[in-house]
Amino acid sequence: MVGVTDYCNYPPEASTREKVGGYWNPSVELVENLTPDLILASSGNDLTTVNKLVTDCQTLNCTVVGLKASTLEDITANIRTVARLGNVDSTALVQDITQRVNAVEGSTSGIPENLRKKTFYVIWDSPLYTGGNGTFAHDLIVTGAATSPPTSAGGR
Image (cartoon, rainbow, N blue to C red; front, side):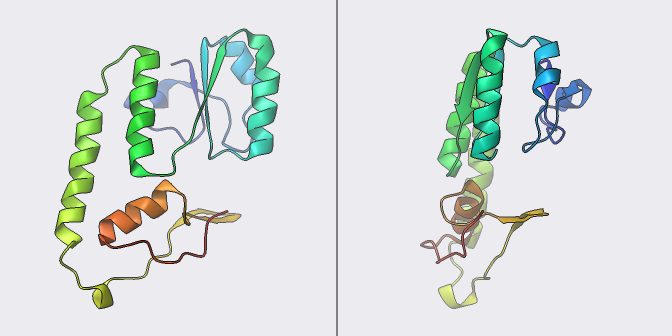
């Protein structure tokens, strides 16, 4: 791993890597200077940014892989994909995540519908960004509530 976004904090080694900008403002020049073999792009980036990054990075002679996560299952699938690309074992991490989700789901499954909390989760504050329907944040909240998905205001 030669570079990360300004927000990457996992694995712990990410804190020692070159920062290449944020989700909305990755620096192609910084990425280019790191001469990566692989670039991972997230669907959390706005489409204009992703398209520009992909177009600009085509001259780098490296592989660009786009990842999208709309559900918790997508998260673990993406972890497995990135692990395969990096030739590392993801079994323990995926098991840990799965166990944590199952524990929350198990502890909340007996809460009656009328006692469940309505939730508004702020992912980012400027501009306001929330995890609405079709996002893994929404899936996590719904899974924790162990109920059918409520109608949501939707994310950005």
